[in-house]
Length: 463
Ligand SMILES: Cc1ncc(COP(=O)(O)O)c(C=O)c1O
Image 1 (cartoon, helix red, strand yellow):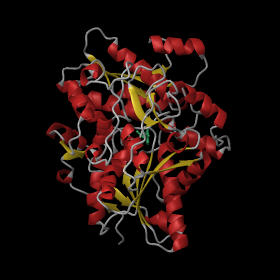
Image 2 (cartoon, helix red, strand yellow):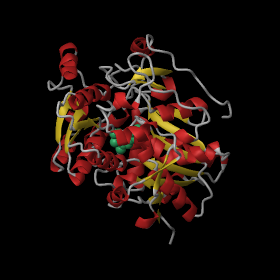
Image 3 (cartoon, helix red, strand yellow):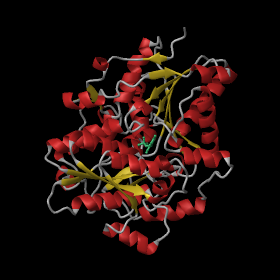
């Protein structure tokens, strides 16, 4: 019988998270406050607990995972590494396609990897309530699940368009005891201001972040903090269990290393999770292509500049050094809600500046076609975000067929699409279309960042 699943025992889970900040050849630029000066940990204290802020600013290469977090992760980790043999046969490719199935978590995606860690650190710090935003609802579900496990209240601001497109995600959050409302809402000043200007807006992650941050910092008891499902250094670090497990599993499968590593990139967390351990190998000399895939309608890495910009619409977050389409950018209402974010994680952005990562943008329809081919060969039904990584993996496998190379392709299957069936239905009915961002719209959106300090492009020139 041909091996399909490469599994690890519970006790083979990584005991430490990997921090790419320790190994980047050029150091990261600091986040800046409203005065243009680097933000100190104390300034972030109303928003995040200090134990997570310490992780955020850490440049230590390895950070121990507390035993209680490992125990929670063991509910679904180590996740299986799977060989997509049926797809390989359907494509007739000599490539070997492996994927890390993160859809096996309780919430159905990679997001619980950081949700349980963040909820645990907040609880340790004496916090009683977390607020957050969610796009497609995967992150909201993940945090709702983690808060129920740990005993925290949870309030989720869900981007309006996804709230309407994916009503079952809200119901899932309710089962875990969380309160989920559509954003922009009338419950925060930021939400009311946005609604006054744009009553019919589909919402955006940038808007929902503004609301969730405001809801946390305005709690006078001091017992509420904000939790972010992507973008920040500590979030990306929590996700590196994906790539660390994959590295061990590939060895078990008899592979020396992958030739290509792929992840879809919204804020950058699942991409960082699968790729950062391999970015570290690349920095040490390995030859690996590392590909971040984003939607053509929200082309942050492929068309945005590397700038200082806010992470949210209401400019409540510090200025982050990142690729951005402008913090007020409202992407088209594509079904991959988790990829509708104007910015990109600073760690991913700096690795792109270095040339360690190649970004690619894919149109929505090609991604749905790939998702359907996947479901009809491999069976599992992917989330629309995940379909971007699948489309790129298929492209790589077809290239290998042309050249006859036995490439080893690894990608992150970031989540299942069982709550995203309305998107598939529209696709089959021919109601979905491709959106390419018009250049004048992008230029108008980027005007907002012109007044901010310039982000220096610093790179070693090695890649
Ligand atoms: C299944 C899935 N994949 C990918 C993403 C993109 O997020 P990130 O870039 O942080 O991994 C999301 C975000 O909601 C998601 O739900």
